[in-house]
Length: 356
Ligand code: GDP
View 1 (cartoon, helix red, strand yellow):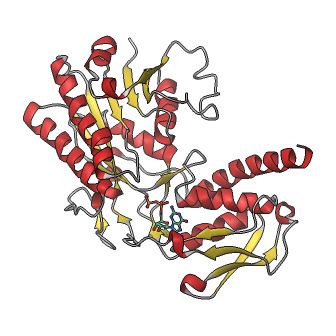
View 2 (spheres, rainbow, N blue to C red):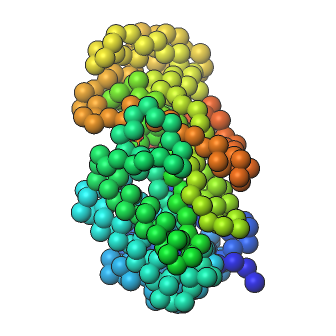
View 3 (spheres, rainbow, N blue to C red):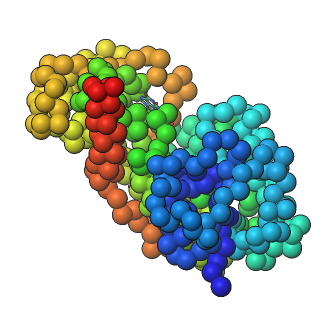
């Protein structure tokens, strides 16, 4: 009998990679998406999904999300991956869509008598750690509450710990640091950079406008991180883990690497909000339409955050030590993958513009 997994928010970046991983492992995968547009065709065009009886999608409305018991009774999952964390929402809506649903999901597992069968994974993020600027975060971190997202995530985190300790459930939290991919939303800086620079090489945009170029982040590949999510549910006892690479880069370095992959050597001039990225050399035909001296990166104060976590440093050694997990994709390889995907899209858009 194959294992059955339920993934919430399956159409997002992590949900889609996790679905791919579990289907390859022979699982039957059920995914919840909120009623609305169907899965992003780009992610799910693979034959893993098309006419695959092991892959089922459930369109849920708000009232069903607050009462997942019926679905659990129907599919009796061995594993639940609760990935439903929308970012940038207000406290009220974040708690309504995330915090309460964690509690409801754990209660639904109990009320269906599945508490000793179903293993539960809760996706938390470095948001949980709030403004611990510059501190290296491990599983023992003390949380602070600087944002609406953090309030919701802290509530989720302790709810999971509480159900594990009180009811002996296999429930754990993954504290994930930034993880990116070509499937990342453009509201995150990495994708904004790769898409913006790819568009610039194809004449679709003139300049990329960014905020704090000095911000340091620990960026990994989402594909590596979902492996860790799965591993967390395969242990003898449930525990919480930090998932990160342990290595940090600045936003400026990410821009520099992405530009290089597109054949552009950048030079940064000026300081603070006057800083600009200027083309110092063109080293590949991809960027042949651009000129040395062109300004293609500008700091725009609109993107500088009033309450910024400028340094996020993680300590993922527990994952390495206990689960033997280490990220497989380097930052350079992540940048290449993202740039190539965005370049292909930009070339197609430029072609359509030319002939359309
Ligand atoms: P976060 O770590 O979850 O906030 O992920 P983001 O990708 O949104 O931001 C990462 C870092 O990039 C933060 O320190 C931002 O201040 C910084 N950053 C600089 N310019 C931008 C920008 O234009 N957009 C975004 N989203 N972040 C930017």
